[in-house]
Length: 150
Image (cartoon, rainbow, N blue to C red; front, side):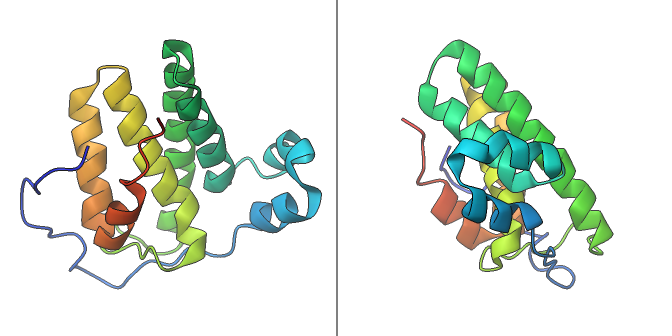
């Protein structure tokens, strides 16, 4: 989904950067490991990171069914991330720094949603999400768009 920018990046230059608070699911995943992943997700359903992990795993599977599941997982994490961003003062635009680790769950969901939308044929959504990621963090866009889940 890499390509030329379709319009000037207006969002990243507006407003104070939004930095999400630490995601308690991150420490729980590190402490409890892969075998307890679904327990962590049930304990922290608002964790965009958990939804990103599910979406990315589905994208790596590479079947049409898994692509649909990835779309649903990524969209869930994206919306939970939007909720968290708004609680953190984000007003719908402005930078979401990639160098701030707690932002990664949301940004990874946004990229997974881009890829999943493209795979299921929703090109308009794929382009919108890719541009949203780029507008939020050019650094994140450059890093995450290297992952094509193939």
